[in-house]
Length: 185
Image (cartoon, rainbow, N blue to C red; front, top):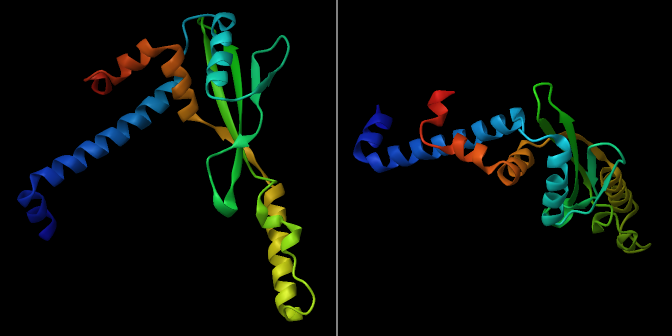
């Protein structure tokens, strides 16, 4: 019973919560739309723009000759501390049966191999700790080094697909963001 009174006392709180929910939902709708988006231009016309976008984002990459596949080099993901990760993107372009093309972006993550958690200079020295402490520290460092070597399977990155769509087809994004566009779907 206290929840309804709270909302009735402060309609601003209710409206703010409603607005935040709507904004969060619309960004998910946009990501979903980016996942299904078909670019009207042929792939040969879109692909140089994809490469330019990734260059603008600061990524270096390799492409497969004669194919529309781009893989970026590994780069720091903006994470810090003991759990730094590296990110790499794979972008694949395919012609669409109805004309135009589609772009799919996958993101791979892995632990930073240069992270200090596996630094051997931090190894215990004899006489400074008990044998049991040393074994525990060695086990912890081994786990850390194993996790650094782990490469996580790539997953589809709808945020990057939406960023590409914003750059390559801004009119389509504006149409989706227009008031009433969500109701029409």
